[in-house]
Length: 351
Image (cartoon, rainbow, N blue to C red; front, side, top):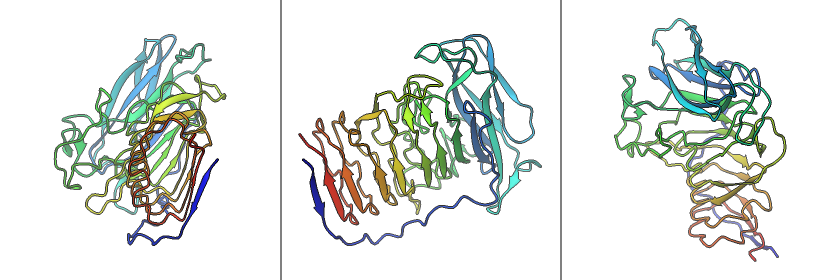
């Protein structure tokens, strides 16, 4: 039996961002296949780097085009179980290539793709050719004149991430170090007072529609400036699959945001969670997501969740919420604290 609460509350006196509109002078682009990855970067800082995890069943290559006219890089793969490597590229501040936008910087479209993709043969992702398991932006210690410990003084020059629909799982936070550990970046950077917010230039993320592998959403997009995100349609058992696959995933702090020096962090308005995703830890997921107005959760989405602590803390714009059944949840501390615009709330079955 569900419980409904309806009430009209005052609106929090906070100036929220308007709906984000993609700049009209950013280049139009997209993956050329469902197995490719693209990103929009710029010369706001002098380099960009990515960590790539890829695999193959025989010797194949992964290609990287940095979008500035320099030769395409290739990486030969030999490990069927998958291998992880980093690539780094330095952009010239006076580069004649790139697209100049009205905000004063030049944009570059980065493309990363496997040379050949075959048929999936096991749930571990062993295919008949090269394939991308995941790609993530990756700050490199000591690189670039704007670099301070693993962060950039003016924010990492990354504006969009676009994953092909069959690229694999999201295994690490984009704020993680090479071991997957979240970086607190103890160095004080000019754009923040708490040395966070390296990805405040990141405005749009499109994740794979059919995410496979072993996704880990722990603080995956924490302290970013995302204004729009397209989540996966479903989690699946392997590359090329279109059948939902149930996976318990740690989602704690997935979109954790922090206001610093006038920046409001993540500013997206609506989000839907994919089929097959069953979080065990949903704490701090939308902490300080001031602009979040709508969230769509399946009726069984929280069936394995044990904590909702601070899950929707300071979601000032959230007006209605239907909380799915939470039979295993034991911690609700401040789950909806400061939801000052919430007018309608419905509990799912708590039994």
